[in-house]
Amino acid sequence: MQNAICSLLHMTRTAKQNVGIRGKQIMELCKIICPKMLNKFNKNDGKALRCPTCPWRKVNRCLCWTICLLFLLIVAIGVSAAILYAVFQPKLPNYSVDKLQITQFNLGSDSSLSATFDVTITATNPNKKIGIYYEGGSSLRVYYTNTQLCQGSMPKFYQGHQNTTVLILPLTGQIQDGNALVTALREQQQQAGNIPLNLKVNQPVRVKLGKLKLMKVKFLVSCRLVVDALSANSAISIQSSSCKFKFRL
Image 1 (tube, helix red, strand yellow):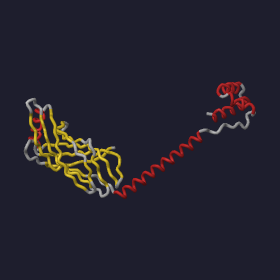
Image 2 (cartoon, one colour):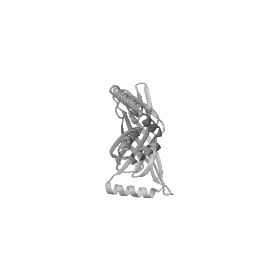
Image 3 (cartoon, helix red, strand yellow):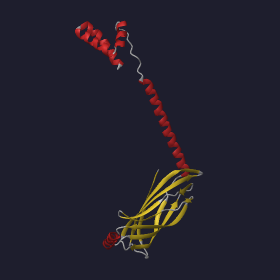
Image 4 (cartoon, helix red, strand yellow):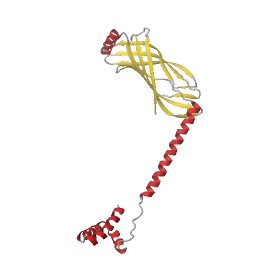
């Protein structure tokens, strides 16, 4: 802005000499915009008027230092992560659903459906130097399409290095519109010969690196099961099972 005003003032000198009236108009405009600079211009007779140094140089210097520090911080974090990865060689845990037993799956007099499942889950920690603390507050839910059949939770326990733990988990639930669900399950079994189920697990954990116990994160496990039938007190065959794992802060 100040550089532009300086140029305008120098232009007025030429304008006064060559144009006359227009030069006077420009000088009047300069009196309104920047009277202090106009006084300096008149005292110096329009010569050697130096505009102040741009104040953005200090801001640019600070911005440059900030960017450099952020870059160094990112590099330090990346190097630390690479060292930790090389030392601990982390691997994702594995989960599988091995058995499903239904002890109750009955319609009540009010058309509600009561369900009790016993689900056998195998959790494997393949890491040599990483342990897993399974914290409280977990949830396990079994769904048919968008209908929740039953739910439960996992116990609190610590899983050591290269450890495999088998868990038998009771899940219970009650569905209000049981007649519609039973009809849908019967039609599904008649058409496809099987019933697809979804098991979703939300498990808070804390990872142990050596002797260091890290912050709490959540393991999210989604398993797709295909069973031959859903009936109480009978052997349920799991035709296929696949689980996907991810974690969230």
